[in-house]
Length: 482
Image (cartoon, rainbow, N blue to C red; front, side):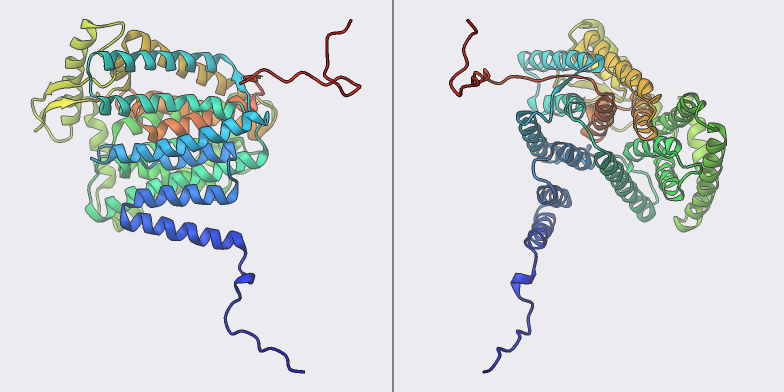
């Protein structure tokens, strides 16, 4: 009796089905990147891997949206395409949370932050309707409304009961997003030798850096983890090379704030000052080495001098290349204030534009944005909208500070990260309009949602339809007791 010869190839039965699906996802992502753009390929790859790892998992879906949205390229002519992709992923996340609610895995969290976000959503909706009634451009309105509504996704994460694995996955996701975002900036800076606007130099690495700092400090280990310290320094170095004063100011406030929260809330559980000094010493050493490397590898022998000159020009209004951005903001502010005073309560509505006539800048024409977030929201939604946004920031900061005193150091670290991220975003909003970008808002919503969820808030279970009558012990339909 003869035995069949073995096949020289690799039998298809030996290929796990999930591995085959992952290979298909990689092919689709590569095809989308080559045929359309790297952004489309990234979205296809991220969604495909999430569907393979855990279809309709609500927290994973939120991480997917936050991670992809961080790479939306504002300032690019195709930003509407980027937002359309983020909107599709947002719809998938909403579907995941609807399914989670039907299985009682999610309930609407009730808290002060929930009320503040509801107020912001209402004022944003009113601003959108007001803009439509005035005939404002719908495409500009969509750019403004979507990011503000993205902040309400913190209620999605806050309604879940998170597990330790969820927090670990969130930490790695944010770290990967931060490093990827910083790498784009390093590449552009190394190849062009100049700082450009948009995706390569966004505040996302700075926001992620504060999250890593909070988690590193609140980690129960007596000494900082070198890997996290290295990542923190890498992200901080990127923010330095952006030459954006708003990002620098956000970190100059955010880093001491995070350290102060750690010392205040951990002073009864050991020696917080010792770990803080060791951490800052390690960070300082790595940053000095990083700046020295940047001075040689990037071909910039005067990086430190450039940073000092840029910072020194922050409060000057002379007609120089270093100070022209200050003049641009002042001219915008003057033009915006005239509109705000004409309609202080409801604003001009979303989708409105300004004709800004710059003196020293080669651009005059309509623009939908204003660099300062607080001026912009007052222009679009009036004083009522500004108060709603300030209420949201106050409620989020209060929530994070309260949770930073939690007995579990991991939970305390995430709450401190939420508070630090709120402070960073609030300070950056003084000079930039990033509250009107999805790049940072979905990450903020993720941080706020985690802080809300770990606080175990009271949850409201929404009823889509009347419950079926309970069965009687005898098996028939239950009726009223006689």
